[in-house]
Figure 1 (tube, rainbow, N blue to C red):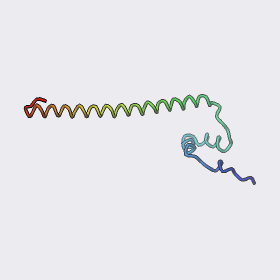
Figure 2: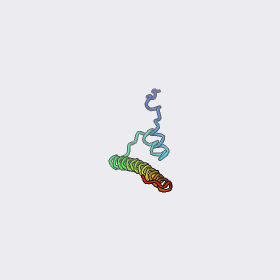
Figure 3: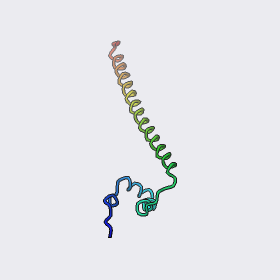
Length: 90
């Protein structure tokens, strides 16, 4: 009986995601050694997912900046209001 290679016994975290998505596809690739025929389409899909991820990160950065600017405007507005209530001019 041939001893299994150490690589064959290790299941990586990415494989768990593949298994969750489609257990049959994981089994076909991992156990039977089949490879998908649509490698180019999968590469395009992977790039589109990466692009979308970059857009989401950018959106969150812009949103944080908007909240910061809104907070700054509120502080300046409150300072001006306080100055007017006290009767002074800045």
